[in-house]
Image (cartoon, rainbow, N blue to C red; front, side):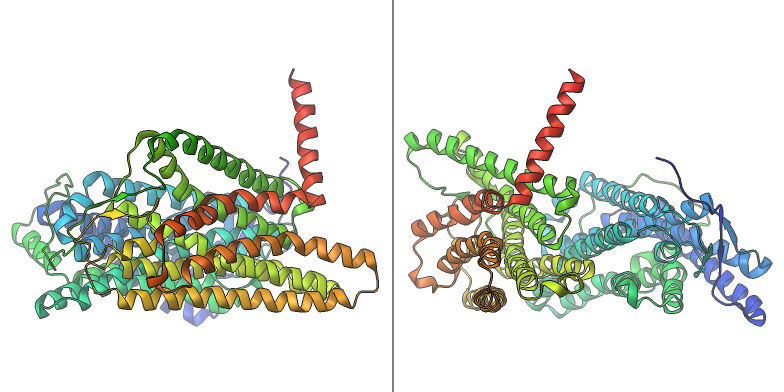
Amino acid sequence: MENRTEITQFILLGLTKTPELQFPLFIMFTLIYLFNMLGNLGVIVLILTDSRLHTPMYFFLSNLSLVDLCYSSTVTPTVLAGFLSGDNVISYNACAAQMFFFAGFASVENFLLASMAYDRYAAVCKPLHYSNTMTTGLCVCLAIGSYVGGFVNGSIHTGVTFHLSFCMSNVVHHFFCDVPAVRVLSCSDRHVTEMVLVFTVSSIVFFALMVILISYLFIFITILNMRSAEGYRKALSTCASHFIAVSIFYGTCIFVYMQPSSSHSMDKDKMASVFYTMVIPMINPLVYSLRNKNVHSAFQKVIEKAKLSLCYISHNESPVTLMENVSEVTEFILAGLTDALQLQVPLFLIFTLIYFITLVGNLGMIMLILLDSRLHFPMYLFLSNLSLVDLVYASTVTPKVIVGFLTGDKIISHNACAAQMFFFAAFAATENFLLASMAFDRHAAVCKPLHYTTTMTSTVCALLVIGSYICGLLQTSIIVAFTFHLSFCHSNVINDFFCDILPLLALSCSDIYTNEIVLFTLASGTIFSTLLVILNSYLFIFIAILKMHSAEGRKKAFSTCASHLTAVSIFYGTIIFMYLQPTSSHSMNTDKMASVFYTMIIPMLNPLVYSLRNKDVKSAFKKVVEKAKLSLGLNF
């Protein structure tokens, strides 16, 4: 593609133009960078040379120090050179390189902090299984995955930013090439770039935050149940450093990046950026070492011996036991839908066909919306996310059921059961909020058509979608944490075909009163709040339709809302039947049949409901088919 960029270099405005502040700031930032280098290199060397620190916790800490050192070194030397020489010019390629490495390493830090949170969860909540959980292979995979995910994100940010045309001012209102500061200089349409930035940054930040929050939720529940004051104190001390680092890092990132472009103040962002580019990398080694006896001891050992010895990192050392693991069940057996042998093959074929239609329908819907510019509207943004959610939560359950029919293997591990419950419940809850967002979108389209584009802006749509995912994940994190904090010491046979919450609660030998209250409160709160939005939206829609004088207008309005109303009726009817009834009145066999609807049938039906009566989707599908025919004709 032709590069339309006319600018070959940028001018960084820096932190201040006041001459009398240049030298003091140079001295201050030089000291910060010196402490940063010494602190992070010191932590890496200590961990490499002391075999007592060859555990997963310190493996991740050494990688965190390396990342801090790298992304600080991407920015700070340029800033120091600007203070000393006054040369704030940076070439186009150097600016792109700086943005790539900074965004890459900053993203890696998100994933590493999430990995460290999971490590602390395993140490505090499952100490007896720690060495089996945090194996060398898993630690290496988490570290490599962090780097891969981070640099993929850095590549996306740099690619979409420098794909823009810069033909106006070349003055970057910042002290380094940060994405928002460079993006505002473009004379191209920045809509796609802004959407990509918001989506990727928010996805990474909230995914990592979700892992951290879930881990600490389990940790705090475990700590509260400890009877030993010493264990209580030790557990808090173990997690305190990581918790402080997470709070500082994410607080700054969210302040800078998780706000609309219109509310950005570059001067405020510059001050905040100083923290995450220079101060946080300096603070992290101090936070992790000042309260750590092992690091203190290793440092004293290095001073006493006055020599360095490089060792291979191994993770076979077991952590100190913080609490006794009361769970005796390590795996569950899913009872499935039926034990009748003659039904296994027919049911396998039926559910395989259902899952195939689900995959084709939802993936097809997502691809159509992405490929056809006529579908790049709020309604189809929500619909593509609804298809994604349906696809994910159906895939959480259906493949396991199909395998059970085919092989008879209905065993699921404790951790796999927790993961299945979390992802299914999270995306099912997300669907509630997406359906409510879609109802609000239909209200805006029917009741306020002239103000639709100003009401359903890109920012509003992005916030509604992101908010739906956040609320769904948060609610589920609480429910899963409360459920798997229980002790399962009786039967391990789950009377269902997947790890649903109610059948699992029935197996617990702990008091489940609190769990039932939490489940009922969160489920009913979510369902009724989203239903209230939907009902209010449709109340205004029906009033608006009744006031229409045009029969064509009424027909079009009804047609627009019919698909959504059908999907809402099926989804909420099943959910209310399943969850908003007292535990005593539950019939597991009846619930199984209802569960089939919302785990397999609804995800299959939704793309059909939204496409069969939708002219735009039909037109887009025909267009894709025609293009495919032409392409095949050219190739053959």
